[in-house]
Length: 152
Image (cartoon, rainbow, N blue to C red; front, side):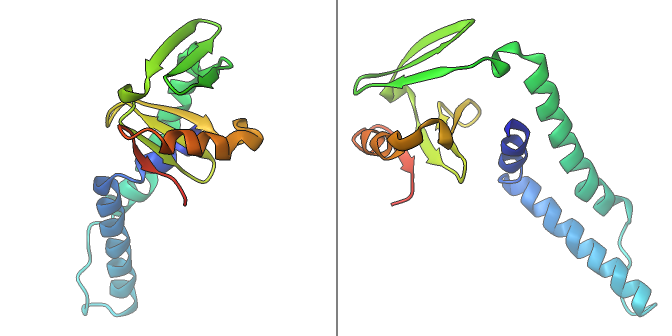
């Protein structure tokens, strides 16, 4: 699940989206050149190979390496949400955050993402909330300092 989330977040980057689009256009140009020789510009073949194969591969392997090289990622982590703070507890880690330390909360299909800033994110599988997911949504909607991206 973690690898899929990291892969999905990588492909939300405008840079990655642009290069993927250009690679697809490049592949279409190569196909058209092969079908109608001399009528279309043939683009460089290494570019789409790098973009369409290497970027997904490197995203996957980086996520795999991060997950298995940081033991804390594999520990069971318990989040407790109150009106004032967020308590985070695991075997080797304990923290308390005030709500104003969270810049944005975003809900994806299977995840809730807590952005501290653009590069630091906590993530919780939605199924971990169980039947309390709507209660959590109401709690975060009551926090004016937190930007929300939740379904209505």
